[in-house]
Amino acid sequence: MFIGSIAFILFFLTTHHFTSEDQCEKYEALFSFIILFYIIGFSALLPLLLPFGVDQMEGASEQSLKSYFAWFFGVLNAGAFVSYSYYLGFTDVRDISLYQIDKDNNPNVVIILLAGLLLGTVSLFIAILLYKFLVNTKRLSVYQPSGDPLGLIWNVTKSAMNKYSQKRRRPSITRSIQYLEGSQRLLDLAKDDHGNNTFENVESVKTFYRIMPLLLALIPYFAVTSVSTGAYIEQNIYLFDQFEDSTIIPQLVDPCIIIILVFLFEFNPVKKRLKFSSILQRVYIGVFFGLASLIFATIVEFVSTFAAPFKLSYGALQAFKNLTHPDDPGQKVKVLLFKISFQSPQFLLMGISEFLAVIGIFEFIYAQSPREMKCFIYGLFQCIRGIGYIIPFIVNEILQAATCACSNCNCKTCAAYHYQCNGAPTNVSYTYLAGTLLFTLYVISLYFLFRRYKKRVRQPREIWYT
Image (tube, rainbow, N blue to C red; front, top):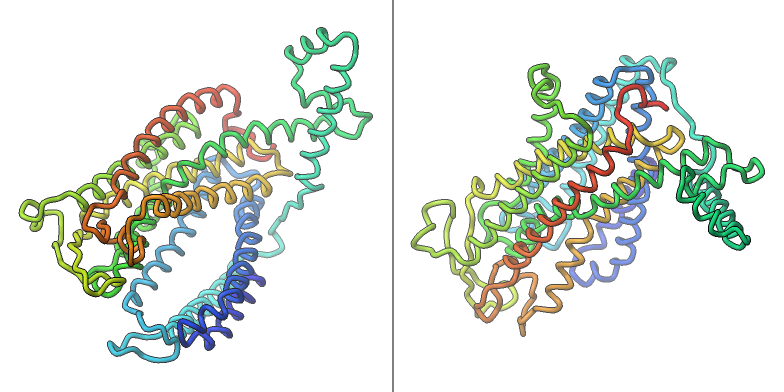
């Protein structure tokens, strides 16, 4: 939190240099360093919040822990809801100058930063007061993990591989291989490494290797959650002031539905109806809702590209307009604008998906991982989630670089308009269609992976702190 606060202050102190586009380019490296500094602080803070809360609930019931996971995820999305709402109030900021009010009396970026700083300060002050008067700090317990998880994983793996290589060099190689394929796993060879690796340490590493393939398999799912909002963010950036209704509004549906589901989760009738046979079953149902959201997004993209004006102008669509291309003022481009009600269902489905899948993953990590690795594995989960968010943007850049047919303008602007400069439709719709087909195959394969894991993982009865 301290590092993140320093990054925010540095960003605030350097904004007075950004008075023109040339100045922005001049201080681009400094700005990137500040953003990196902020990310480091945020990355160091987030993996500690969830484990700290669980440490305070040692001995609590399984249902209490599930409620805590739900409320933790709900609070994160409440922050996203406030952030989107806050941004929504300043969507008309278009002036490059940071210290001047533009011609439409819109506030500048410095005013936005000051308002955000004031809001954050008030929130922090309220949190400190609540913590001081409502929380008995003497009863707080913090579990300090012993050792280095990465070092432990490396030592156990290295020891097991050395022992395995020694067994293979011996004359009785056939007998050794049969021994490995029997009751003993490869990592079990490290248990008798002259007492350097205890039984508990080896079992912890085995559990880590058992969990990680499943978490890595969820990268495509997190990529889809990023795609669900990425297209509209890009459209909002490149359509500038010609776009009437902000595309941020539909994105409020995702965190809003998660917050509502968190509240509903506390009612007993809802709890009884939401019972599943296992954690992985709930995660899989969440992934399936993600597929439904992607299918709806694909439909939206196809309608936006190929719909006929005389059929849909007064239905789900808002209007067809001939707008001036920002990069080519002499060119008019026909753009299809949606009603917010037509964009919102995909975000509603994604909200349900994240509520089921992410909270289920929280429970899975803490039900399966050893106590000394809970913080470490949760941090890896956040890293994997971030990788999933980045992948769609990388793929999008590659596709645009490979298929761009624009000669005198920005292809990203063309993608936002759903038309290229020559008037032909872009490949955005086909990209969504291909992604939907691939994700369908992924969901089918994930079903068999979860069935395999269901036979190997423990169920959350009395195992939350083992």
